[in-house]
Amino acid sequence: MQQLNSSNSSLIAPVATENLIGSSVLAVCFILGVPGNIAVMVRLSGWLKRGSFTPRLMLSLAVSDLLTLIPLPLWIWALLHEWVFSWVLCKLLSYMMFLSFYCSVLCVVLMSLQRYIQVLHPEKWNKLGRKGKKILLSGMWMLSAVFSCYALVQHNLSSDRGGRFQCMLIFHNEAERVATLTWEIIIFVASFTIVSYFYFHLHRGVNNSDFFSSNSLTKLVTRIVVCFFIIWIPHQILNIVIIFAAFTGNDNLLRSAVSGENVTRALAFINSCVNPFLYAFSARARQQGNSRNR
Image (tube, rainbow, N blue to C red):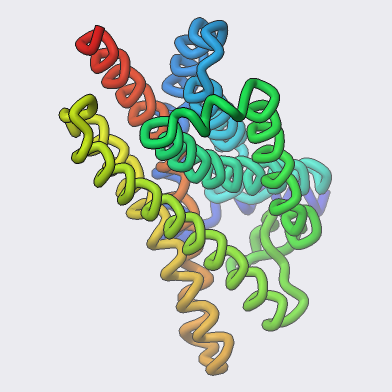
């Protein structure tokens, strides 16, 4: 009876502004992203028989994005009310969310590497063969699974500042918080640096090539990188603020920054929502370019 009363009170309790913003963003991402990624997966399924590596990467990205977006109704409910689901589901969905995020990051990195080698050094790419490409894809998923392991340990059920029962990151001390956020920042900075490096040299190589005289595709992949960076940068800035607050012992700044995590994490889901449109358009531009060159 006490648990029932607690659940009923959570339904009528006022919702924090950051939770309202976060849940609204997540709802839009779910409505647009789920059908968008499913449409991309259906379209790509007809291209896999050609043996091209790019559609397989795009399919992996669509799968990881779909895994991120499908559980959003549960997270939206938790933001507006509280977590009424099991401890096991909290662990599982948290791990799946981080797995999808890391897979999305590594997929973008691998796409930049693949496009750079295939366009500017096609003989090296052809030497890789089907087996090498399968190893790259499998390695990407396995590495994502390893990177996400801390989500199983650190996510647990606890009460937030408003007294609501939530599935959330629980740190035993500030050192653990700083170490976790620093790791996320390192992954982000390293990934963005690698992607920027390959696309910069790809841009130079494409412009110096007669065959690739049209740089429309280069501009498109550049927009993909810029979009990826813009969407993720608010969350990484907030991570830096939290680390600074933890080091300086500024409790007010730390509480304010932590309360804003729901908003920046929700904004990060936009990447999974936008990706199918960007990569589908990229594939269409590539097809049009190939038809012109025939």
